[in-house]
Length: 152
Image 1 (tube, one colour):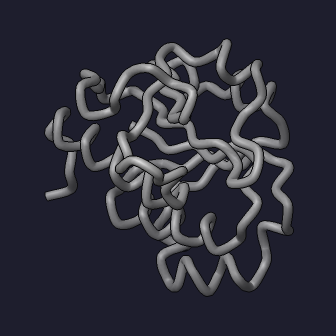
Image 2 (tube, rainbow, N blue to C red):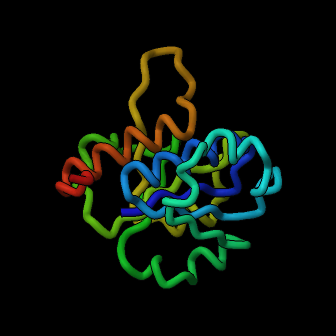
């Protein structure tokens, strides 16, 4: 299982994603361009000392991400407020990549079209959205639980 961030806007979220990936032993894909340099001190501060133990792949474009060898390993699962299937009812598989859009713009239509499945996280009435890394952690935890893939 992998987590992918599409053109993230907030360096602290990438740092938190790096920490999440390191702690749960899951690869992280960052699809650029980002709205900030990936060497930003905010990324380092949020990742703390976990960056060295995280497996992070940078892709300079959506096309490069799709062409990466890891993409051939499983399904692409897009998390979107426009999806129709709740994430907790979905059957995850070990090779799945969980894709999350940028904080300000989500993902383009090309990403919706490329996704094998589109999932959403149900929210309380009136709530618009979760922080992208909170959503990633929830989805990743469900996927790891279903596939019995939490680190031991």
